[in-house]
Length: 144
Image (cartoon, rainbow, N blue to C red; front, top):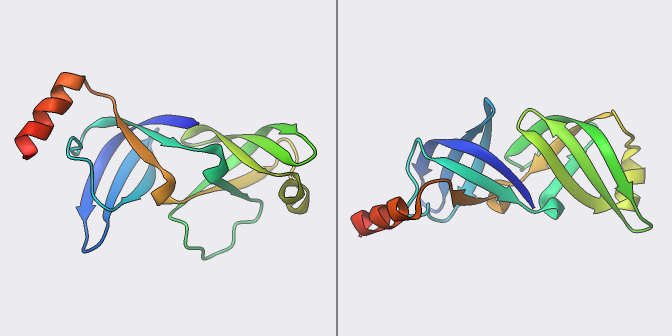
């Protein structure tokens, strides 16, 4: 599981979904949720978590894709088996691990130290508070 620390910059409630913009190491990450957690407020420090299998990688990122988060990175390590590859990528938001098929790895012609783009859907990112449990309970009570 990838787990990065960020700060909530904006919570934008739309007609169907809510956009949550988080800043991590000076870079933005956009989450898409049906509803924001009741405990969440702008300014909160949070963990952003996402599974390795949710991290797509592109060597030459196409101009337009429906994925919210496109993060430039460098491939720093590869663990390869017959069927799967675990990629470790260094990016502006920190180290991110991706799990892709070996076929995909070979088709992309990836190699250590190459430049790549991390593609991460906002809906695949979960939030976890980085605040005291008592403060969370207090916020939930205040919201009700």
